[in-house]
Length: 183
Image 1: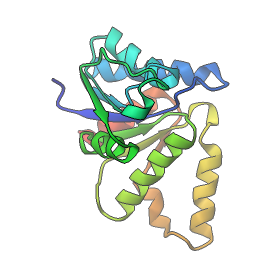
Image 2: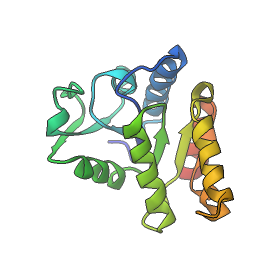
Image 3: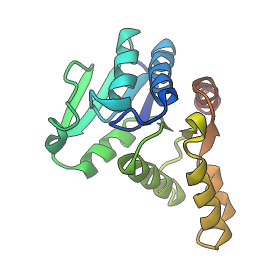
Image 4: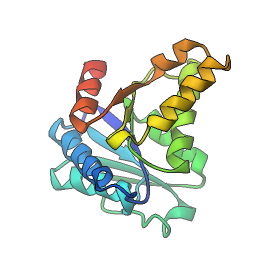
């Protein structure tokens, strides 16, 4: 099994721009090429399904975590290397992060934002020091970055908050950032 595990947060939909799907598939392939295990939300739809299928097609290890109430909604992908069913969303997020060495945020919706902000908050509180990479495909996360700057500018966070994530505009950039952070 892979020594390094990367948690990928992403949408259970493909989104409007085909670049999102291409990035999810590219990231899945790249993680497998590095022999890094993918940890994700265990869905077989949207970007979640794409990143997992791409990793699996290249022989990559996959670790999926899904709460039982989403098994049908997100079409739980049961052919993963590891498939964990939890009782709650909180358990899902905890298991995913505890088992990961790093986090990558692909485009996604409210769930992906929730996961990002929890990981960011935990880093700010000193509960983890794992690298977090925002994969800013086609500028998708630009409004989020503006909002985070606004939070800092308005005095609700120190400028050091920016130290808890890095931004990459491509899969190659995200992988380079991960290699640099993980050694």
